[in-house]
Image (cartoon, rainbow, N blue to C red; front, side, top):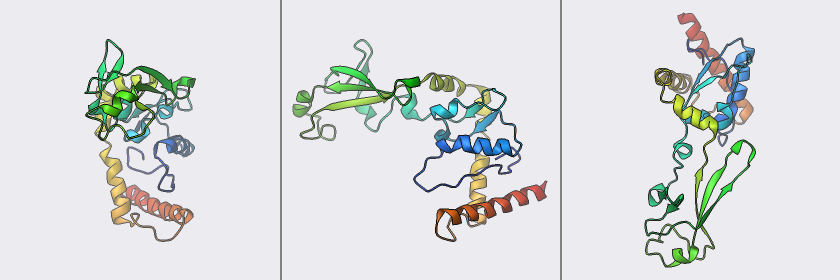
Length: 219
């Protein structure tokens, strides 16, 4: 969507697909429609590593105003509160005092894409640990804890998130949610009129045409 709230590109997918991987296609559509883009505003779904590497047709880096997922920034997991980091040993420690035995990098080495650092604990200690309930599964042959490894792109984005430019642009994200609300609550795009993805695409095209026409007439 442009700053004037005109929808310039749209992709309809089935429900299990993530938003982030669609960004390059949306960007390409917008370029074909004559838009020149230097900044993209969105939620955390759009702050993936590949999206942070996007460059426009002139070769200038596009600024992505989207916050990095906390799981990447802090290595967060649902049981993160259970583990402390011992900086001297460079290992994680369970509250019962069990220090990880060793660690290994998991994932592709190319560009550190989706890599994690996995810490391995002594499973024999886990078997008799008084805090094992909800942490150690009986008969499990290993106990590990993994955290995401930040890439250079993620580190740069963390710095960018602290800038005044990022904060100022973030204030405009409500416009996107307002447009979604208009499509769904005013023009019926909260419910499929017909079966199948192709039908949903047609319904989306008609709804977008209407909201764009309304906006143009308002101008």
